[in-house]
Length: 411
Image: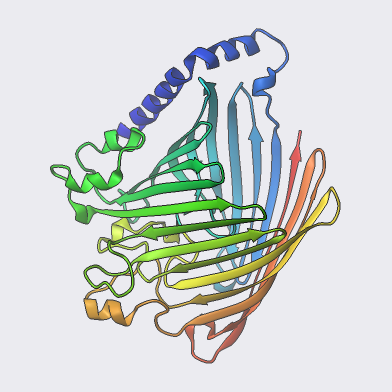
């Protein structure tokens, strides 16, 4: 009930914030038989398929704009795991309503429903929020101006095994200079309510870390992460980076707190893109297993979850005005640590430091091809590689591959 009221309140505030211009624009639209140019939006049907080692999945999505500034997104999928002989499972990956407003030089977007949210600067991977489907029930809003963008997501991560689990994440991106943007973000995952949680969830820009110091708040019931990021644009290159911290000071060699962090750096130079990311063990975890930054066991941040690093290089090329492609190579290393792990002692933590146990190493190549036309887009991506110590078994060799295909049609 509280979250239903919260959603209604947020939508009401959004309407009030954008009322002077948005209301007049909506009135103009409904007084005319043709769509208003400011609110004209394309309807899209998308079909996606994925085939990887041991897993096959697919989805069909529809995106329609039935009212001015409003968009309904529905994506249903089917997944099966071939190596376990489990039956294919159908589910709704996303169903959400998105409403856009514009007023006083600011753009406001409010979204409510089940969604996966992508936030961060990474081009290949992301530390803060990967946006990988399926989504989770959430209320999100974005406020953007000429030099800034602020995003906030309030999500319900409860499952059958855990009846209460909430996540709140927000990020501010600000253009400090014409060629330099900086960002700061926070994530808070809690396993129990605390006094004032509804206020903190909805109001923008309040530091989530202060919840630890509220009367009645118990820090053991939440997991707090902070991210700093930046992007510098030069004449011929773009340099970007992200750093996410679970504890402070989270740097190697400082023993007052465990070094629980993730790093991501990337460079774009002409047609070339290179990106490296690294996650220590327990990077998204917490002593309270109910506050791990995951949803039903799936990491919400970086796809590795914890205890690994990834390096990938891609070369992009435009074959023609309609065709584009990329080719590249990658190296992944993954220790035995998983996103929900935690340690019982300082000795165990040090023994299970970065790249713990038998390290699984994957070396491979990647290739992507896409064609864009007036009303449709075709795309395909393939990654394939050889795996050393497959399944974290010393000396075993195997393979890994992932193929994705998709088509979108605008009508």
